[in-house]
Image (tube, rainbow, N blue to C red; front, top):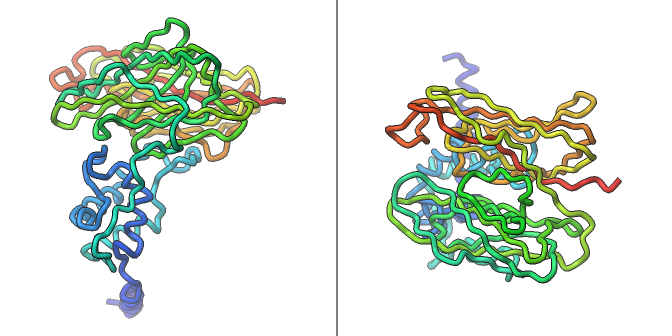
Length: 391
């Protein structure tokens, strides 16, 4: 071995030997609390509980694999294509800490005699809501089969219109509920089990089990008209045995006057038919802005055949602003991507939505025995939340 390589290897070994090995109490538990235990606790959606040292130590190899492959925390947006303030991804330093800890056989550090759980209590994120909505009856989620999106119409009976600043959800069974979308229904509007496409349904907010709830700043709200219906769509996950859920949806209202109301634009292809055997079927949809707008968030939605979606805005001068790119779409991990810095689009901008679909036998998301044997319906939809510029 060349002397330079021997010297470099020796120096690197000496540096590694001097670097203290991370411990559970010396940094690892804080990372798990920040990024993992919102889902990974007993009785919650995550299959592996990580809110105590014995559990974290037992699953240390799984932790290492999940973060090494970037499977966890769940985040589908391609890095660098858009910038989002609700991105839960681990930093490089945090990943290195967890990997070094797992490789060192998960040392505990100085544990108290009875280490308390560091995870936050399961309660409303912003205190008691101003209005709590709940379906009339519980939903029975079967043990096996396709994951269904259940839809409910709930009457508010509010005498006055309200400006919603945030929503939160307390699932009846946190092992089941993955995603909730809440929107305003028009008079007599009833919900359907189809993927929502109506641009008339203004969003009141989205909730994901993997992300902390978010609230709008002062002066910006989502309009909930008096006596309107609220449409609640809940996506469930099946866990191998039948259970029931009756979730509660909490709405928080602004107390002070509102300067701007959030608007929802649905960019959609409408129902489309993907030919049998097609593994890379392409579809597009566009929206042209009539006024100057400021984008707050984007939410990609597709069905079981959807594999990839890209959303970008073309400005009148020809420049492009990247909004979001989901390279490996998963309808069971739907979420709103909240822009870290709101994006200004001048009038005449065109938002392009491009998606790909797989209706071949290689798509495991299609029910077995019926994979790619006939044309199937799907949809390409992106929800944009924005406010109109005041001048």
